[in-house]
Image (tube, rainbow, N blue to C red; front, side):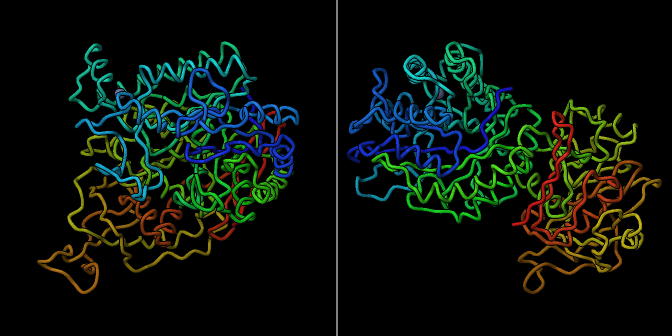
Length: 606
Ligand SMILES: [Zn+2]
């Protein structure tokens, strides 16, 4: 396995042709001073940007028209002089000048439009341009050949530590003329979306393999990464294993812009399954990429960096170099504050794997996965990712998000796991097959159908409320409500077997809230005592909770749902490898470093 440096910077340099004196103020000494101040040991530097310009004297591509120096070469030299690794950035799907001069290279929708967003029909030159707006390039044909030729040129002319290719979006499919012709020649049906998706995946695979082959032929130790293939909300990437071409997995995430700090832990655990280095990438800025003059508080950077190490990942913070080529020293002072701490703890985080006997069977559906992960993180119930084909024997319990079909194809494996003493906690539709019309495994219940009302109420069994003695965790003080409590979305309906143990029942509202009948401001109250269906039950080693508690927690964040879930989970997950008693913002991560024969507990609070 190629090891990854621990303290990285991703130095964006997307630089307009309307700007003068590109790189004119670059100084090797100033560049090195910034890297030393930031305690940086790897930095991604730019060969080609989103404007299509290159920052070295390319004969194959197009140098920035106002480029004053070989910026790429100067940066690599400066890095290598002080022992800093310098992978090379190269844009893929976003290349503005290429898109404008070669519209035939652009991806197209089924209707023939550019694949983009918010692009008006005829924008005037002084109209405001939205951020993050581009026309997506199709990585085949002449455009692919151009990328290949320029990669060959770089590999010949520079010492290559690695390549970072950017903007790969497997969830966007293409109907350009080249793709249409290619699909026809391979017998794929352009009117069938799954065929078009498959062809898009093939296109990307061919493109990525060709680039990788060129790099590895001359630089066999180079790291290679295609960005955009590790996002959990792009299941197309996982369906075709596109991310497997990467020699490492960068997990780009901007917590202060993209939805908070709880996306990363599950993602890190999922990618540790690939047995390749994991890099966590955030930004030094407050919002997102391209924010000149934006700063994240140094303490926030330190928390993010500590979290990255705690989940076994290298750290990477994004920055954007000023067009003149001077590094911003406040940025590197802030990053240095975080990386000084990383230097102290990195040996306890890198080259490690998550250690937990609670498995998380990811569904790659954002609300379900993140809601479930958030409940576990806030309860400090540490977990590891698990999936089809994995060795399940190390897990005491496996939790399954509320996504229909997530277990389909693994029925026999799970049956054996439960027969061998493993336990399962299934949330809502996670208990169902892909069609959503029957349970996927024997769980002591028969699926009857979807909810009749917009909301419903749970009534927890007195036995579960009183089951403090069965709770071996440190969280014994949480009291569950004796009253019916509201669910913001109704439960699936089941009939449970006589042998099953009910843990909670449903009470339904008098009616759904409609124009025809409604009650006051919000949801209709419950019909007390009328209980037709279970809200949760246990059948041997399998527990089903009939609501999508994960989605509800993601959307509504009601603590009562988390308390209920945690109490039920702890009935079967009685022997966690690590316990902590922290407030909900506390995080715990247990890592295994077999090479040092040790386990390391990381505790975070922020
Ligand atoms: Zn295409």
